[in-house]
Amino acid sequence: MKLPRVRVRMMVLLRLSAVLTLVGLALMCWAVLQPTPLPTIVAMSLGQVVGTVAFGMFILAIVIDLRRDARARRRLIDSGEKIHQDLHEEPPA
Amino acid sequence: MGGLTSNPLAMIAIGAALLSAVILVWFLLARPQLTRVTRVVLLMGIGVLPLMTAGTGNLNGYNATKSRRFCGGCHVMGPYAEDSDNLKSTTLAARHARNPHLGEDNCYYCHADYGMFGTVTTKIGGMRHVYEYLFNYRNMSLEEARTSIHLRGRYSNNTCMQCHSTQLPSWQAIGDHKAALEEIRNDTTSCASAGCHGPAHPFSKSGKQEAQR
Picture 1 (cartoon, rainbow over the protein chains, first blue to last red):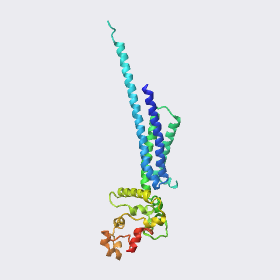
Picture 2 (picture 1 turned 90 degrees about the vertical axis):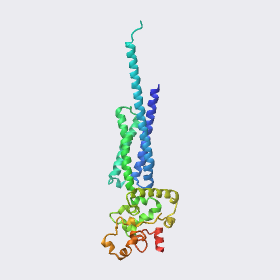
Picture 3 (picture 1 turned 135 degrees about the horizontal axis):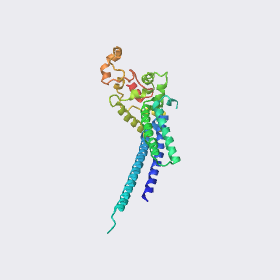
Picture 4 (picture 1 turned 30 degrees about the vertical axis):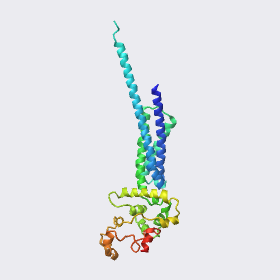
């Protein structure tokens, strides 16, 4: 039962990424609405870091999803080949 | 908020952020199935739109760091910014603030380094200002700041010569300019010294020191 665990981990990553993106966006918008030293520096440092981490997590979630799909496809192909072999195997003499 | 509608960069940044926020809040609250469409929408919400906000926000931020409002954001710089805002002030800084080519950005134009990497070195110097403010000047009273804040190095005439090239006949026709032409060009006599065009600010320590010479 590895498949559901991977799915849950990916969804957690995506939700965390969405929340972090909202935090990063809030920091960036703060600097746009109030262009004074503190908001500008916070947006251009912390805001960028939070946004980049969020995007990184999104990419990671995509990679996990693609690998999961590839693994499932490979398993399907393997089981198909086994059925094919079973069907065409000559009965023992 | 009033300047937002006249600033396309700020409008793009806020617009992209709002769109992204709508997508992300929908994803967090509606908890949709991860179909191909959901993934593409999420790519917009977490990737494309925030990148647009970051890009335009950064450009907007760099522009904002040039403005007098930004420089006056630290309380110790308040009196300097107020002097530039004062239409009746006759200081060098205030007169430059009334020049339409410098206007709101007069602090930056007179304190930015010259040359190819002038903007970069100016921004690095600006980060030093932030450090100094956070760790040394944040709790300083205005009275104390007026007497203790000073330029780190000598104010170079090269900054003045970005606009006042010293080449024009009308500039050279002024007796004092003509007499001190070489010293002005090789930076041994400061344009901003008392008796010439300085002190640039009414509270600057360097101005007081120059006046005592």
